[in-house]
Structures are given as C-alpha cells and as structure tokens.
Length: 334
Image: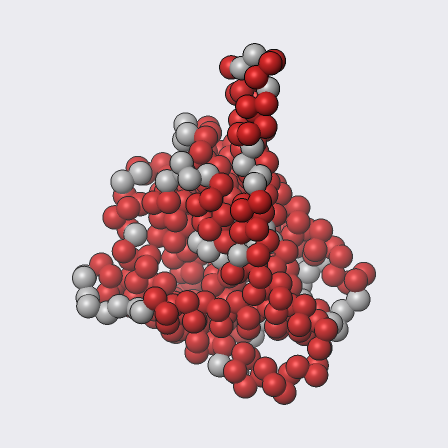
C-alpha cells in the first residue's frame, strides 16, 4: 500500500499540483491567467467527452447498462448520505445542501489524474467509463435541490396556514435558471456534447482528434493541475475558518463514498481499473458544475465552505492518497 501511495506521490501530475500549492502558500508571484485556466478546463472536458463517446460506440447497451445504473444510483444516494452526516454535525440546512450537491457530483480533474495513475500502474479499465463521468455530473445537483425543496416544504407546512400554501410553491428552488445551469452549464454541455459527437462518429473521429485530444492529454493535465494547486493553496486559510469537523469530513467522506463506489463497480461487473474509477468518481467532489448551480439556487450557502472543502481538502486528499486507496480496495474485491 505504501509503495502505491509513494508511486502516486512521485507522479508528474501530483508533483506539479504540490508545486502550485507551494507557490500559493509562500506567496509566489506565479499566477495563472483566467483565460488560460478556462482554456485548459475546456480542453479537458472535450477530451474526456470525446474519448468516452468513441469508446462507448464499441459497446452494446447490454454491456454498459449495469455501470450506468450504478452511476445513477451513486449520484442519488451520495447527496442523501452527505446531508444526513452534515445535519448530524449540526451544520445549517443551506450549507449542508451545498455540500450535498458538491460531494454528490464529481471532479473531472480527479478522474483524469486517476486515469494517469492506472496507466502508470499498467492497469486497464473499461474505456466507456469516460461516458459514466457525464452521467454522474448532474443527478446529485437535482437530488440536492429536491431535498432542499422537501425540507422547505416541511418547514413551511409547519409555519404557514393552509390558505398561505402558495408561498410554499414560491419557495421551491426549481426555476428555469437552475435547470438551465444544471443541464447546459459549461461542464455538462461540453462533456455531453463531446460524448455524443464521439459516439456518432466513432473511429472515424480518431485521425482528427487523436493528435490534440489524446496524445497531449497527460501533458495538458499537468499544466491544469499546476493551476489547481495555486487555487487550492489560496483556499487553505478559508477552510481553517470552519473548524476541524468540516475538515475531517472533507477527508473521511471521500473514503466512505469511494468505498461505496468501488462496491457498486464490483456489482456492476467492472474490472479492477473500472472499479477504481467508479470509486474515484464517487469519492470526488465538484468545484465546477455544482458550485455554478448552487450560486443560483442556494445563494445562502457559503462558497468558502463547499468550494473550500472540495478544492482545498478533498481534491488534494484524493489526488495524493485517495486514488491509491480506492485502487487497493478494488484489488480486495478481485
């Protein structure tokens, strides 16, 4: 186990992430232009979507239906488990909902780092897992907003008379802007759109997309993780403000959800690599799609909590320690 963790720590993607954190902590003048970060993010989303669509075109529905159902199950159950755990920790409802959406959704960059880890370990995986990424991006957001509406409804029923029931309906968070952001926000749109393009074109797309979106993927991921390290390092102080309980949650929750993901992957019939990736997806936390939706639907939730934990605690935890642990758990199931 220690050898696997050490191997991961010495990989280029992790070391460049650590370099970014180091630069931020020691107030280096190293900065990432916003346009560069946006460009690298768009590249990774298109690359993963395209590869997922191309590979998905090789499989029958019968082959992928189990992992698809498993992914949807994880997208629905993790927000519920997160909300229960955070309410037990006495976190207020709005911030608990914010973290439920964040931890129920996924980190596309953590997934990319896990692929690099598997390739370095010489472990194969079902390439249609790139398509599973798309399926796990949005369900948790909707489930979390549904939970919020149910809790609001219950509270309003207790506080309002029957003749004022219309106020309850106005409190529901499902407005057109929330739905638009959840379905057509940048990450979901690029992932789903690229997936469909890759699925329709299949192998015909490979000669065109391979030089940029496949051959250069690992190198671009290194550049992106350097920038992510800068962002994570800048949020360390924000995380400290919210106490040891939430920091502990940011490290314990990924292990619980990651183990659940590996287990679901096992029952879905995935290989060692596939189980590992399902665990990584379940154990990761979103800092793109979910925060964008939360900004509109739950403005009372504190971004320094859900972004601080996902980016400042869970992301580096998974990148350095979590991925090797999920890999070892998956090996146990073999």
